[in-house]
Image 1 (cartoon, rainbow, N blue to C red):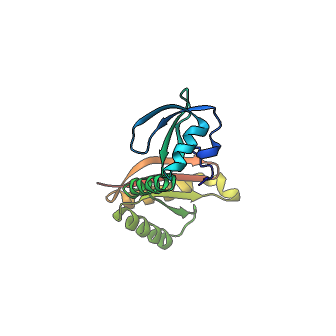
Image 2: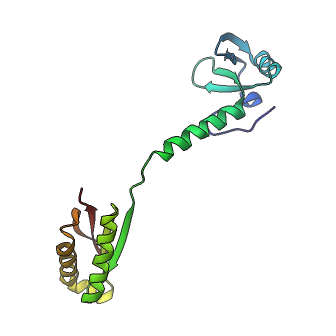
Amino acid sequence: MDRTVTAKHRVNHLIRVPEVRVIGSEGEQLGILKMSEALKRAHEGGFDLVEVAANSTPPVCRIMDYGKFKYEQSKKEHKTRQHQKATQVKEIKLRPRTDKHDLETKVRQILEFLGDGIKTKVTVMFRGREMANQELGRVAMGKVREEIKDAGTIEMEPKMEGRNLYMIVAPKN
């Protein structure tokens, strides 16, 4: 019944100490036993010896069905992950010379995202000599801000980072 090592628990022969404090399968204290005796008791009941507190002296081990234990742990983790809501951020990329019609299309997409309750990162990308005319990018960002002021709030003001000017817009509650 030897099991392999997991990140959290050592099992059966992977526990390398002479004596351990043993807790039985029903939660009863069996006291401090030699490793061989503890393993024997676990195997007699058809269970595994699992180290649950490695830092104590002597280490605390529990007699349990390790496969069942791992299964229950994974079910708990799955349930906690299920109730978490991941915040989603969509990104819309513009250029400083993005035409009026294209800008309207991008704004419509942003409004759709905000309507769905999704944060949106608006990025104006500069290439080559466009870096000399950063005010064009700020004007484009200003137009976007004006169009979306009713649907969203500016969570982060426009900021330059490298060759990109970006801001983050959150939906209004």
